[in-house]
Structure formats: structure tokens, C-alpha cells
Length: 228
Image 1: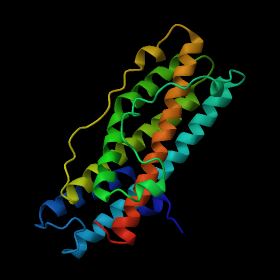
Image 2 (image 1 turned 180 degrees about the horizontal axis):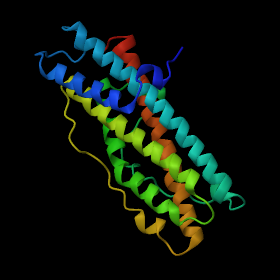
Image 3 (image 1 turned 45 degrees about the vertical axis):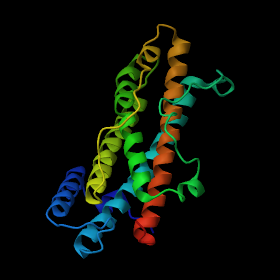
Image 4 (image 1 turned 120 degrees about the horizontal axis):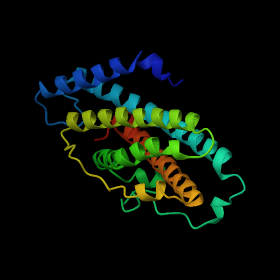
């Protein structure tokens, strides 16, 4: 049975403390092994981090699906947005595996780097989503609250992935695809603005599912199979 987030870590502060302590532990031990099999303590810490980030990515994907459904119910009813040509996601230029089977053909290091790049590419887009949603008609406050929660979890995921990359000796340099859709979220045309939010949240759902899939594969390879 999958443990709840509160069972794994009692608070966000304890999560961040664990991430920092794991990184410091790794930096204090010399090893050239990606799996850290030379040090059982570090390997255990790495496995816990992978378990936590995989769980968190599933939570984020679920919450994003709820946000998308709630936005549809409140703002997209009768507008047939599904019949329109969808806007291109700003992360579409990343060469990403399309499913779990294709992901299994990638190395854990390559998938971790891809997850890192996807998360970094959503920093500005999520900030604009949260800040601009208040301009929507009606009462968008429940949607804003959910979007803020998702944004916070993306930040925690990014911290976790950065720590894991450092632990396995991979670079965590800032690599991302720029988001340039703010003008469409600020359009004076209500329909344009609404469709832009719809497209952005749809892309967020797409990428949150990809991140979850990739982390599940990473965990399977590095923890279940001990392949690095």
C-alpha cells in the first residue's frame, strides 16, 4: 500500500530538511557509483527520495486533473474547446517518450534530466497562471487556491529532483523552454483569455502526467531493479 505524504513526512519543512541533509550526506562521501551501492546509508536515502518524489508527482498529476475538470465545469461549458485546434504546449519541443514502454528504453539519468527540464520550464508559466487567473469572471478563488497548491508541489519536486541529480553525480543546470503566453492570458477578449487558460492547464496536465510516468520508470529501474 502506498503511504500518504503525511505518513512519509509530517510537514513541508521536514521534507526540505530531509532533502538538504541527503545532499550534504552525499557531498561528504566519495563515490563514483550512480546507484550509491558503496554506501548503504546513501543508497537508502536515495531510495527514499525516489519514493517520495514519485508519490508527490502522482499527487500533482491528480490535483492537476482536478483543476482541469473544475476549470472546464466553471468556464468551458458549451464552448466546445475540445473541437478547436489546440494551442501548442511551450514544452512541446522537448523530445519526450510518449508512454511508459518507450520510457523504459531511456536511462534513469536521461529521464531525471528530462524531468528536471520539464519542471524548470513550468516555473514562469505556473506563476502567470496563479497571478492572472484572478481576472476571470465569476469566482475563480477555488481554482487559484488549487493552482497555488500545485505550484508549491512543483517547487518541492524540483528541489527533490535537483537533490537526486546531485546524489548521482549529474548536473542540475538550469535548462528549460521559455513560456511566452502571458499576453494571451491578459487579452481583453474574454473568449481568447479563457481558451488560453484552458490550453495552459491542459498542457500542465499533459506534462504532470509525463513527469509522473518518468519518475515511476526511474524508481522501477533504480530501486526495484537497481539499474543505473
